[in-house]
Length: 594
Image 1 (tube, rainbow, N blue to C red):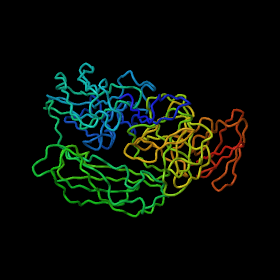
Image 2 (image 1 turned 30 degrees about the vertical axis):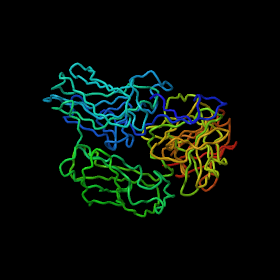
Image 3 (image 1 turned 60 degrees about the horizontal axis):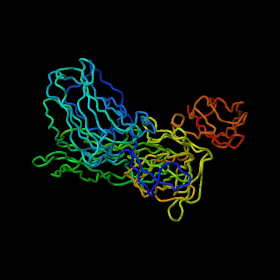
Image 4 (image 1 turned 30 degrees about the horizontal axis):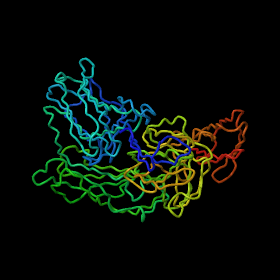
C-alpha cells in the first residue's frame, strides 16, 4: 500500500506553516542486518537436497541477500518466530529511489545457494507467504517474482510470480516446479524478487518455511513442525536496555517470560511430546547465571494456532558492577519434528549507558507534518534522574527525500496533564537525518553541550527546522507516552506504537568515532575515541581551546588555524574522558583509549 496515513485532521501532509500539525504512521523499518555475502560456489560447494529454511535466528549465510532481512515478531498469526522480509529498503538502509513512491520496479532480491540436482527429478520450491503482516500491506500491482538459474547457458528462467494484495494477516502456501531442463544439473539456483514501490518501506512481503526438494508435487506444502512463535525482546521487565548503574533487581527481574509456541500440522495420534522450558542464561564472560535442564513433558492436540506459554525462569538477584551483556537460550526437545532451528529462542540483552523501552524492531515509521516547527517526543520513566549526553535515533526511509531537512533535539519536563511542559534543553544547532548503519538500527546524535541533568520522568524528542517530515522508526509491539505538536502546543498521540529513540546517559558510546552524528554547525572532533591524535574543525579563526582532565585540571592549550582547524597529539594523555573548552563558549568531550 503506497500510503498508510492516519490523520487526526484532514488536509494535505505537505509542509505548510499555517496549518495544524498532523501525525502520520507509515511503513516499517528494517532493523536486522543483511546476510553475509554468498558463500557457496557453483563448482565445489553445491548443496544436496532437501534444503529447508524457517528463517529463525538470523538469515543463514548460504543466502545472498540484496535488501532482504530476517525478522522476528513481524508477522501476524505467525507460523514460527522468524520470517524473511522483503521491505523495499536497500542493503545500506536507504530507499532505492528516495522520494519516489510510485513507478514500481524490482528492488529486494533473495538469491539461493547453488544446488546439485544430479540424480534428482520432480524438484519443487515451496514456501508460505504473507502480504503485509505488521508492516505495509501490498497491492494487486505488487508481486514476488521467481527465477531459476540454468548453469548450462548461464541464463535465468522465469518461473512464475505471486500477486500482492489480499488478507495481510493470513499465510498462504505457494509452490513452483523447477523446469525439467534443470534435472541432473549441478550449480542450479533460484532467486525471489520483489516488484513494488522503490520509495522505501512500502509493499511488505514475508515468507517462511521455504523448502526445495525432489520427488515432490505442487501440493506437497503441508507443515509438520512445532515452533516458537513469539520471542520476548528482553529478559528483564520494562526495559530492553538500561544503564548498568541503574540496574535494580527488585524492580527489573521477573520469574517468567511470556512466549508462545505452535504445533504446525495435522495432530498425530497421542500428540507430540515436547519438553518445554529448558534454558541456559549466561553473562558476557560465559558464566551461567541460571539454567533449567529438567522440565515436564507437555502433550496436547492443540494444533495450527499459537499457544501462550509462561516460560519460568529464576530471579537471580543480580548486583551489577559494570557494563554487561546477557545471552539467554531457551528450547524444547522431545519429538523433534521438522525444522530444528525453530525449537530454540535466543535473547541478548545489554547493560551499557542507554535506556530502551521499545524492542528495537520498527514495523512502521512515524512523522509529523504541517504546522510551525512540527515536533514529536517520547516519554521516558527512568529508574532515577541522571545526565543525558546524546540520543540514539532510528530514522526510517519512508517516502521522503531528506536532502535538505534538519532538526533539533529537545528535552521537556512532564506537566500535570502528561504532556511536555517546561523546556529543559533545546539544541542550539541543527542536525541532519542520517540512516541506520550496519548491524544497528540506530545512529548516535550527540548533544551540543557537556550533558544535561534530567529528572526521572521526561519527554525527549525532535523539532523539525525544515520539512516536510522526518520519520522515526515505530515499534508496534510496545506503547505509551508518544506525543506530537508544533510551536503552538502538544497533543497526545492517538496512534499505536513507541518511537525507536534511546537516550545515552553519562558516557559516550564506544563506537562514537564511527557512528556519531554531530550538528551541522557545531565544532567537531574526530577520531573520537582516539589514542594518538585528534582533529578539530568548524572552529572560528585562531580560536583558543583549553583541555581539562576528568578532575577539572587544565592540562593543555592549543589554537585553531586561520581555517578553524587543528590537529593535536594525544599520545601523552592517559586513558579517560577530557573536556575541551573553546574561547567562544563551545564545550566538547574527547575520549582517549589506548
